[in-house]
Image (cartoon, rainbow, N blue to C red; front, side, top):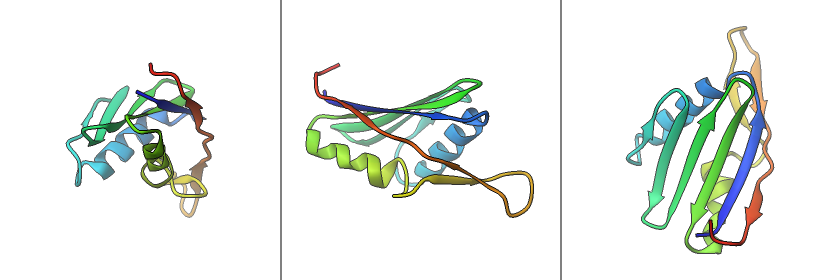
Length: 105
């Protein structure tokens, strides 16, 4: 299945992984822990997340390469994913660049 990946450097990867999964749990059957998550968008497309102390890793698998456009609308807004921080009126925006891997993995 064709795959796209993205790595976002952040010290808050686990928190953001959980927030993203909770957000999608209203529409999809989501599985997640503090270190990993899975969101099946359909029978042929899903995103998985993993987190460590330094980064959030995202992996989108889609049976049809055209479905990789999901990464733009499902995995981040056009500019960035922004999360409120503990300090008032402060957001941490996670900019990501997706890499396509055309070979099946």
